[in-house]
Image (cartoon, rainbow over all chains, first blue to last red; front, side, top):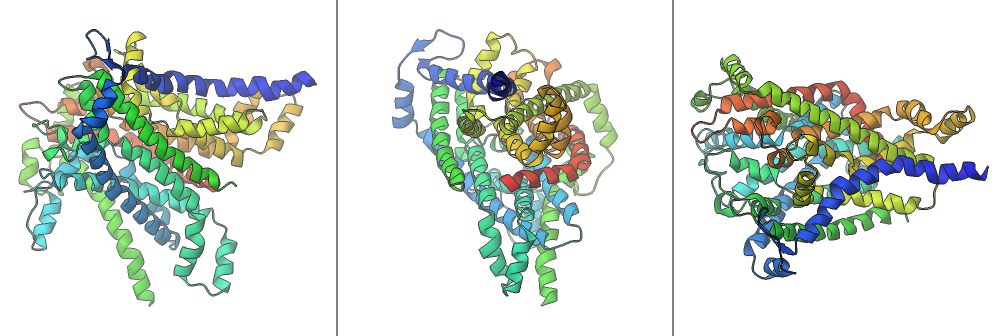
Length: 300
Length: 271
């Protein structure tokens, strides 16, 4: 009998958990640990490796203005994009939960942008925001405004990327919020109705607090995604003939794009890029820890 | 009052539906143009060059790239769903000492930004002599932290322990229980995760960008980029390729959409 219990509390859990953790270690964690080792090297990827201690880190923290500007760019793009997408997602989930007709059809339509390949998103948004023939500028001109060269302007280009984020994620957030709302029991709403709560009161005092977990989950995953932003920014500019790094005035240079450029650009600095990735790792780590605390907080 | 409510409901809904659909429509509509003509017309109205564009991409190695993408995404999907559901199964069915710790570990894996280990991953793959193949594009997706977290919370809500225990009494082995008892119970969760994994791998851009340098290994994003050259970028053909690349995703999603949303709902209960 004893052996039997051990089987269920030791052998089988290990057998079932092993593939996940082995794969995670080999293909996800080990590369990061290796990058940690490389962050102490001066290495272009093909020549002799030179151990230089923490010089890479010193450079990042004291001299590398481009890196810190890319951090600000990333924050600027993300902090405009994600909160708006999140709020829109919540609002549209609230609207959708109140209708019966066409609900699942609209939900599917809203989800479509999330399915689209970033390569396609990049190309289409270039066309939409193009100065002379882009639909968006046509719209502006129709209302009497003056066409703007969005993608070519250091000021507007990051907003286009934020807009791509909003376009892509609003439907996804809507679906997640709607999922969270459906899981709230009908009885609670009934009780609120009997007590004479208005629709808005119900939303703010009942629905919203119960959506806290979904919100925290979405904020954490979005934050991690934000810090790794690359596809949208890169694809907005690389399909054009002039392959500028970071877009006009480098205002669209995200952290990972800067990292990518350092590691695989014309003048590769693998060691230095690795140090950048480790710094980024710690930034994300700290933010995630805060998020994890918030997530666990609910259980106590 | 009723009218105002109707307006407040349907105007935003229709607006968002339009905003969601127009870029989609543009992608399709512009794929029916000869590249040079796109900018001379209203691209919202389709033209007649679709067949020519299809011919252009068929003549380069579109089919091969498409099959490569399918191969990579299908394998990444199957492997990660198996591995993550096994982890979720273990976290639900068994009681063991380090369970709380393992649970936190899974949460942490969800937060590890895999993408930033890409240099180390490249060197690792080079040393394993896999860097000239499609394998690196698959391996990185298998241990999805999100997947394990998701499966754990889903299986906890969908698999009754009584079922597992009665199967054990009937003499079923653990692997049998996982395959024959757990799988049917957690189908919506599996479908949801499978769809997401396929989607992420299918749309993934940075890994193919770095790992693929031979034409025979092109996946769709890289193929589409290869249609842009210094002399002429064939936007029409590029968009045709992208439209065709969106079709399997749309089919999968249309087939699984009910189950997918049910899966998301059930996962969010635990949230």
